[in-house]
Each structure stands twice: as C-alpha cells, then as structure tokens.
Amino acid sequence: VRIGVAIPDRPGMAAITQGAELALETLAADPRARALGVRFALRVTPPAVRSAVAAAERLRDDPAVIGIVGDAESGRTLDALPVIEDAAGDGARALVAITPTATSPALAGRSPWLFRLSPGDDAASRHVATYARTALGARRAAVVYRADSYGRDWAAAFVRAFVADGGAVVARDPYLRGVTDWPIYARALAGARPDVVLFPGSANDAAALLRALRAAGVSAPLIGGDAVAPLADSAEFAGARYAATFTAEWAASAAAPPAARAFAARYRARFGERPGVRAALGYEAALLLGQAALAVDLGAPDRRRRVRDHLVALGRTAPHADGVIGPVAFDARHGVAARAVLVATVAGPAR
Amino acid sequence: VSTTLPPLTPPAASAALAAAARAPGRPAPHTPAARAARAVRAAAGVARAPFRTVRARLVGGFGATLILLAAAGALGVAALQSVGTRAADTVAALQSHHDTVQQVGAAVLREIVAGTRAADSDAEVDARRYQQAMDEADALRRDAVALPGLADAERERLEAVGQLQAAVEARLAMVRAYRAVGRPDDARAALARLAADVTGSSRRSAGCAPRPPCAPPSARPR
Figure 1 (spheres, rainbow over the protein chains, first blue to last red):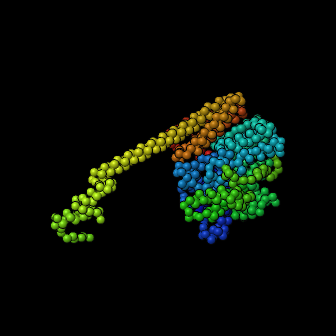
Figure 2 (cartoon, helix red, strand yellow):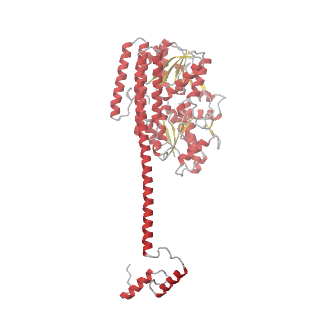
Figure 3 (tube, rainbow over the protein chains, first blue to last red):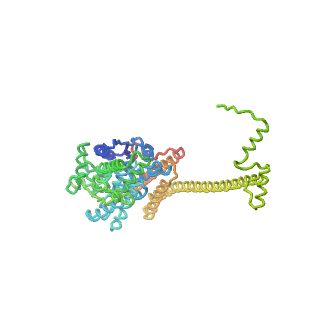
C-alpha cells in the first residue's frame, strides 16, 4: 500500500516527507498491519514535477496509492483538487488528500475528498490580528504576502480582522521570489512606519525581508504563519513571531499531550533536528491514511472511497483518531476540529 | 456427424408433412371428421380460435410487426431527443467553460490595467480599484479551475495563468516600491519588464507552453 506525498520543492517542505516517513515506521509496528500482512511505502512526487496538477495525476493514476499527504500549499491544492477528485472521470479514480498545512478558507468544504489538518486562515489570522492589537499594541500594520492563494487569503483575512479591531493597514504588497527586490521593499516599508509587519509567506523569504528591514532601520516585529516557523532555528531572527498549531517548544512543555512529546523525541532521534509544524502534521496525515487503510477492506474495488468514509466517520460514528497535537476528527467541511493556534516568538534577545 | 434417413415415396412424404404440420390431437383440416367438427362448432356458436386461418395469421403477423416498428420508431425518436438534449447540455457546458476561461483572461487584463494605473497614481481610489481587480481575477481563476469538465492540460494552463497573475502583481508592487523610494527610472524599467512578461506569456500560450513568464525556474516559487 502506497501513501502519496505531494509537496512543492520549496525549502522546509521536506519536513512533511520526513514526518510521513516516521509515520510509516509507526504503521509498520502496528499489530493490525502485521496481522494483515500489509506493508506501507511512500510515493513522493519527484521535484522535477513542478506542477501540482501533474503531481496529483501521477498519484491518482497509481492504483497502489491509497491517499495523498498534501498538497502542502493552498493554491496548489486548489489547482490539483479536480484531479484528486477525478472530476473528468466522474470520480472513478478519486482518492483522499489530507493536506497538512494548506489553510485557505477557499478549501473549506470544497471537495468530499479533501481533509485539512491546520485551522483555516480565518481563524489563524484573527488570532494574529488580536495578538498584534492587544499583546503588541500595534495600530499600523504592513502586510507583505506571497502572491498565491495562501498569501492572498491570509492577508485578506488579517486585514479584515485588524481593521475591524480599529487598526490601520499602511501597506499591502505581494511578493514573488526572483521578482521582489527586498531592500527596495524594506525601504518603502520604512516610509510607511508600521508597528508590525505581517508576512504570510515562506521562511527563506521572511529571512530575506527581515535582514532587509533591519538594514533599513525598521524594528517592527514580523509575524508570519506556520510557513515561517523554520526561522526559529536561527537566533539571528530572534523576536520574529509565527502562528502555528505545533512548535518543538510547546511539544517539550507540560501543556503538550504525551503523543506530542513522544513524537518530538522520536523525530529528533531519527532526523537530528527539531520537529516543526510541517513534520508534525505530515506525520499525522500519513498516520491517518495508514490507519484508515488498515480499517477497510483493501481488496475491495472501492477501497479509496472506504478510506474516505473512514475519515469522515472519525469523531462521529467512530472514535476520534489520536494525533500528535491532539485528537483528530473532521467537521462537516472536512476541517480539523478544535485546534488552538499558538503565537510563538523566536528565542534570543528580543528586538 | 451425418445421419442417414430412409427414402420416402411421394405420397408417404406428403402424408408425413401433413402430419407434421398438424397440431397433435387435432383432426386434419380437410377430412370428413374435421368438417364435421367445424359444423358442430358453428352450430353451437363456439368462436373460432384466433390466428387459425392463414389470413388471420398474416394479419396478426403484420399487425405485430407494425406495432413493433412503431414502438422502435418511438424509442428511436426518444433516444434521438435524449442525445439532442445531452448534446445541447455539452455545448452549453463547453460554452460556459469557454466563457469562464475567457473571463479569466479578461479579468487578468483588467487587473493589469488597474494595477498600472495604481502604480502611477497616489489616489486611494485607484489602489482600491486595483485591489478589487486583483480579487476578481483571482476568484474567476479559482472558479475556472473548479469547472468539472476541463482536461488536465487545461488545468495546467490555468495554473500557469495563476503564475502569470502572481508575476504581474509582484512586478506592479515593485513599480510602486521604486516610486515610493524615489527611483522613477527603475519603476519605468520594472513596468517595461512587466509588459515583456505579459507579451512573452501570450506567445507561450499560443504555443501551449504552460510556463510562468517572470522569474528563472530556479528562482520561481514552487
């Protein structure tokens, strides 16, 4: 039985695959898998396949693939969704996709085959807007967002919440790697005098912007989504903040459930690095797919549909699944139910 | 397998054929017994069995054939109507797809126009219009992607349109940033690169190459 992994070839995304690899080890030790003689393997789309649509086609057309971990980004997920649900073939080859990190509100209830493990941008950006207004006392916000569905939706939801809370948005600009000149952006932002810079984008780009902002004399804190969590690996970015459902520090704290602590320890031992939210949710997604596969008749011609029905039943007609962050059940629009959003600050001398 | 039958004389053959044609237990039609039976039935007012005569059988057979032909014709007409309806639905769906995809292209063009104006203006209303145009183009593209009847190749092309849109928006943001920091020459140069991007993308679209036009592949977000 194969579990597909569809992620973009972007820095930090490999953590999702690593989390899925760890889940395979957990599944291999599952007594049900041994009793049934089921062995799991990952099918990861090669980096050369840049198109999310093409990646989804490959996984969908492989009959051994029972479900997909991915896609990791909202825009790519939206593009690939009709392929995943086999819209052209009346759903005959449709398969489940559990996206670990895609958060666009446009994904909610979009397809019966898509499940989401991260809270939507609406929830995350509302938390961040409240945090910026209350904890940071920010009144003027600048938003620099990645020019794709994730960045657009996150920015739009934040702007709505921040303005409704009495704040003002003094800049709202998209960026694209290879086009955006960060020093120029930073100088333009300095002129706007923001109290906080919102950054729904990638970690590498956040690092480039942070350096440019500091060079331009902008000391306003930067807050990103979970995609910028890898900044926490470097003290250079101390003071930067990010919103996520999982951090290594939280997993090590007493507030975290035992499953989170155990996962963090195993991940660190296996890969020699701290697990971030991508690793944790990649693990959860692959584990859910594997456990669903073990619960259904894998010889049935409609096994992919049965896997989907198994996931739908979690927390309703069947007990919830045990995830890394907490119990996993999906609401009517296939979003994960009841997950808190943390705002983490990169350790070091705060700026 | 071959079977050898004994030879029959002509009178014997006629009798055998007549016997084979008769229903078992019935008298031969032209025998005195048969004539007597008919007379008895006629006297008693008993109705004749249907299709007993050749004429009745011919009428019945042709009647049944006509009924079957009429039924087949009716079914054929119904099937043709159904095919016609389905064809009309397919044409309507294709028209809808075509319209939606056309609308995406038109929306991206409107976005470029509004963005160019906003980049050259400090008016709040221009910025607002540009934002609306961006949102509209993005929403239309998402709607187009969600259309059920698109081929995978068409989806890849719509994906490429999204990448073009991203490139346009990022370039226009650079134009504004250059203006904000007092570098109008760089702003003009960025605007020229934007025009080249759009032109290049149109040419590539004509050649069906789903590639975004902006950054080199290594630098493009994936």
